[in-house]
Structure formats: C-alpha cells, structure tokens
Image 1: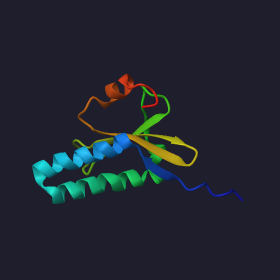
Image 2: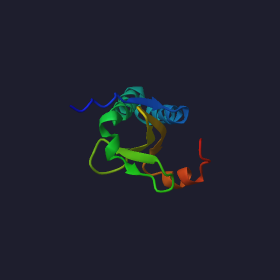
Image 3: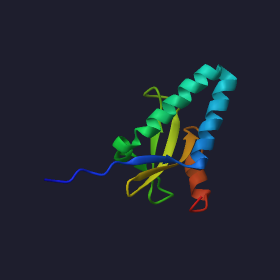
Image 4: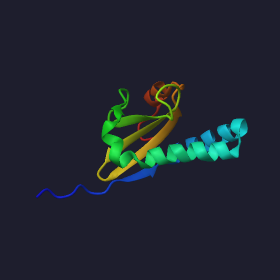
Length: 114
C-alpha cells in the first residue's frame, strides 16, 4: 500500500503579503473597504488552495523552479498572478502581481533569493 503524501503548507512571503495589502488599498480607494475585503479574501482563498492545485501551475521561463497560477473571478479578463515555488512540504508564494503588469520581466530582473 502506498504511503499517503505529506500534508502541504502554504507560506506567503513578506513581498507577496505586501502586494496583497497594496491590492486591498487600491480596491478600497476605488470600490470601498467591503469590496476590498471580499476581493483580497478571494485571492487569499485561492492561494490557500495551492496544495491541491500547485501541480497545475505553469513554469516561469525566466526563473527555473518558479511556477505561477492565474487567479481571476471570470474566465476572461484581468486577474492576479501568484508566483510560487515548491520544496519538500511547503509551497512558498513569493509574489502576487496584477495580470496586466510586466511580471515576467520583473522576475527576470530580480536578484535570485529575493
């Protein structure tokens, strides 16, 4: 009998946490705090679902070992990108970018280990 896979945990980096705070602020200023709470809650929930979805992430071509998942409410349109890497039993969420940003270029310019 195969042994069960170990439980995976999600760890949100300070950079990703700061991005979520910025997303909340932007939404609060434009649509109100209630909307900001709901939307950032939606993003956080999607991030916490990575243990069951991380294998579906696409590789980041400029950063070996990094993967990303698009998070959006509708099938089309903008959303946010969660960039993560997986090791042992931890999924490290390193960044959260708006899908309209040049996020691939930002990652390519980033010093490894940031």
